Length: 458
Image (cartoon, rainbow, N blue to C red):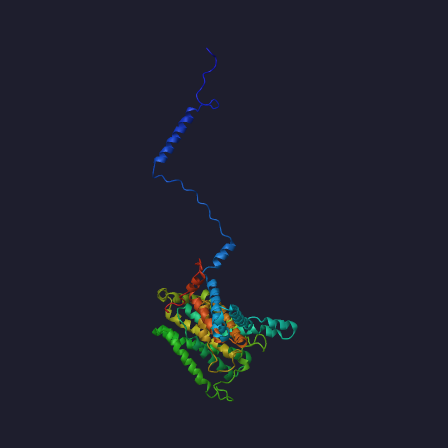
């Protein structure tokens, strides 16, 4: 009988599994088989991975080409410039004639169009912001520093009254009223300011203060009338203010030719000149027209912004503008608020009118002394999205267009009415953000609130 042990089954290199291990393996196989046979058992979900945060540059690019207020406003300006260029080409017979043979010589049409448009817009820039030739002349001593600042001076001069009338319209908008009467309120303001300027014998500082306050008072009176009619009788402010515009215009025409008001040395419709003691001081010397009215305009912008955003009256005003019925339920006097809105709007428009005769634009009353600052104020308010600081920037833009348009007409032969067309186009595109968004395929902005409805009840 041999002494060698009996050989075991399996691989000779491994030890046989113990009974406990065998039982555990059998149990695991049974559980896996049961899980496989159960049809309703959900598979384990993978753990969610944190999304990577986009970089600051990526966020800027994404929001840059979105339908936010800044992008829509900028692209509206671009569209207005492009349409204005097309109108320049169409209205110029010499340039338009080159398109009759564009298939044979396209360079003639392209070059003539580019020359016309580039020179026109270059003169618009030089007349409103900066003229490189004037700067070069100042460096070599051929002209003074005042020639360098002349474009800015003209822009600020035209912008100052527009700030006031724009704020007048914007303030009424925020209160739910459509103030079409800024033109009439500015007209009464200019009348009161001029009368105080040449009828009251006062010392210089006091005379200017009284004349400015008289202009504000005239506008307040002309704003109080539609305000009280709206509050007490429910008369629509649009109808009332339009009618009061005509009344103010004809009253100005009648007043100018009255004894004691008309210039005794003139036979046409012009009043006596405002005394120098009642005129706003010029900021950059007698050779430049910019005056202290622009400083008053900035101060008025700050005051309106504070009134709307920081004061109790401003909260009531915005509440009434958002929902008069809810404001009345909350205990706010809608009647009182409507009256105050129109009075404050009239004060602002009256200050704008007083700038026209106390500043450097004119020194006497004429039938056209107010020009169109009241109606332009509506455009300024719309472009500024009825926000005070936006109105200030919009007024500067309109002032630049007006100042540059004068040079564009003189040097390029472009009609000054084209500037009015540009202003209208800008407002059209601003008021239709959906059109701009569709043209440029803008994405929806995350936090943009394009205010297409500016006034409740209109």
